[in-house]
Image (cartoon, rainbow, N blue to C red; front, side):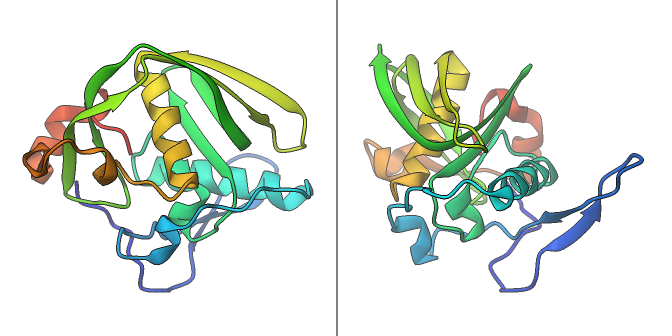
Length: 193
């Protein structure tokens, strides 16, 4: 998968949201796997102020711009326990998430915005999960997910623990390069970002 984001340290692009109330939203650079931030365990959020809500808005904007279905704060070089995900009609933002129940096992293909141009096949994940965490204001929330959404949530929580899908490969042959054409053909049904 090709990505227009790089880890060159430039300031994030700024896009104004449509509508009467135009608040600037930032599209951040997505860092890639050689950045050590992606291998660190992200810090727990203790202070819930407007900056958390703003970060979540920016993360959704960044995820959409990069054509992803999930994004963790460490992927934009912010090492705190926050992720966003969107699949079908579910839009989820969680702070300090923790998987409290996982059932079943299935294998699937995953990609990652931080590992552009490659996917991993046969990545093992639970088929269903229950995740507890907090919303942008610190209120306790729980999310139950199955299938593809469960896979997305597990992938994003891995980012918060410094784990990449590369760490979940059973063998090196399960990592393969994808061309832009293959990526476009696969669409979001085959890849997690």
